[in-house]
Length: 329
Image (cartoon, rainbow, N blue to C red; front, side, top):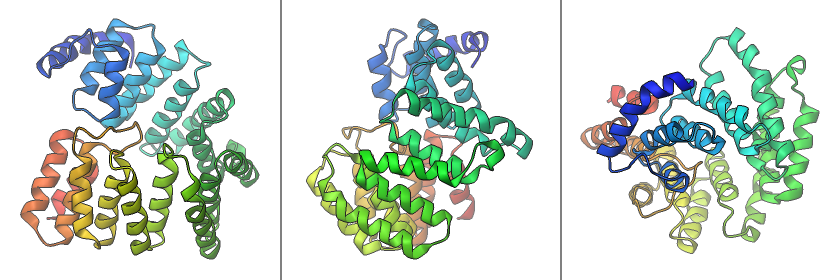
């Protein structure tokens, strides 16, 4: 977002923030807390923060994150570009620019994709160069290298090198990354072997390694191993009841499979508890309501599904999947 445009929005943002119980004086840490938990006040607070701290790259990163949460992908790219301009050697600035470009590139025509792809690649490569332990950026690069033609910097060998680097740092995510390459190559037997290896290694994960466990759960659902996914997630939720991720994943399992509905609904209701700390990469509350709508729709309760989809849209008016769900009732 250009500074002039931001100034135009800033009065609205400040008034909105005040009406919602936040103020222009909110600190970086306070705004980050709002962004992390998907608070509806986060975007207005982040806009006010940037207005008060135009030269602070971290403030622009927070605004990028808040905009991505709200589906404002064009604005998020502009905010992330501003963060990188202010702090080109900040791995997080480069990483969030890559994320914003990744969201945006799926919305444009082929000519625009070709123009944007090098910037996306460069952002993630810079993030990895600046912070070699940033595995999310390495995983994003794998997807780029697999899908981009060699003329644009793609290549299977480059993807394999990233898998090796991930595996060296985190065996579970290494197995999951390797499964992604097998999936790209349509080798389903090899995918299953890699997921089995990830599941076997998961008990040795550090307690705070949420991303790896989420990856295991998502892959088990993709393989339609629904009972195994349920057992994995319930064990995780019982061991770490204050972690939000397994509760959402239980809901996702039920929404996708139509099975284990009671566990899924309970999980999503628990996920929506504001007391549960959320992370940047955790789905927004609107996504949780969308998943509840999916579950209710599959169960034949159109009224409950409508309420859930409408709640999702109140939180995120541009939530495309909630709109589709509502239209299908």
